[in-house]
Length: 548
Image (cartoon, rainbow, N blue to C red; front, side, top):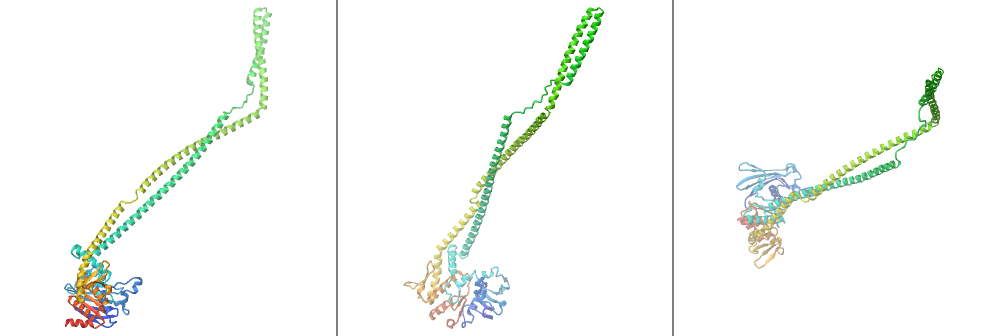
């Protein structure tokens, strides 16, 4: 990739400025506040966009720092560059309301999509972090960032495990982490659901046990009520048995007959007497005529009839006297019979009431017994339901879904650990490749003073001067920056698929003239586009010297 032209419409202090660049080494010099750092930031913004921060961070981010005060609606620019033998035009508007980006191939007019990743493809997957840690060196920012070491580790594992850089180790770690997060979330949701189900079952068991206790309490009350009624009924039966059947009061008249009988006897007696008298007169008449036999016969018969008549008359009179006495007695005893009849009526009513009460109690006993049976049946049903739910609760520990999720989570953790172990084992080999390249660059920049660079497991740098190993913190600031520059340049060669311009913004302030000339000489021979922003003249003088 070679940047051909930068057209700054409005960006920071730069407005309507054109900058034309060429391939190879070139220097853009100017005094302080000239806008060199602004132009450096503009290149980065054109390549990767410019996002506005959130909250308090928005007050100090690059978007706010370079937003034009006078015409914020014209916050935009254009970059023309070549890549892969084709020319492109990249145009961006950074304004928060009209933010947009367009990418056009100037050779055939094909419109590409920045949003769909066409620009990322032209940059070879270059990220802002790797850009800042390799090819872009700002003021007092020579030391590479954390993302460079992560990218180097990624490169090492990819290259030494697969023989190519096509596999993205960092992306694999991100994928595993995202998948683990998703599975862990699913496990948590499953646990929450299972816990809710268990709580629901426990609540239902509690409800059933309360119902069962209520049924038992009600059954006990029914038992007491039934026992009380049975005791009352038994007491009534015992009382009636001791009293015995009621006897009718004696109301006899003492007459032994009736008025019609005494009257008939008296009439019969009178008739007999009359008949006897008539026979006696007839026998007298016969005797006067001298009929002795007939006289005696008729006389005897008449005497017998008269005797019978007398006896009947006497009996009738006796009966009549008794009936008269009896009527007198009945007249005196009428009130007593009425009292006895009232007593008998009351006894019958009381007996009927007791019978009704006894029947009601028997019916009440039957009803209570039925209710108790119904309560026992309901209690048994609820106990069976409770026991079934208890079994379901006991089996509701770990679901098959959770077991499978846990197996997936363990598999992902094992995959991540295996990948991390592989990265650790192959990281040394990747570091060796980077160290060889960086050592070669440092040897050329320092003209052989330092022949090697070492990077330990904690990413601490040291150099080898042919006799001893010297930690970087014991070296001068200029030498340290040369070491970091060597690491950056070596990393750029290892990591970047496309040739990206090297950009230096006052990055050589601590170099002496000799080391600066050696560094610029190496850069001029690198075959890359190199853009140097400086406020001094010596970089331009050395470059002119190298060209001459």
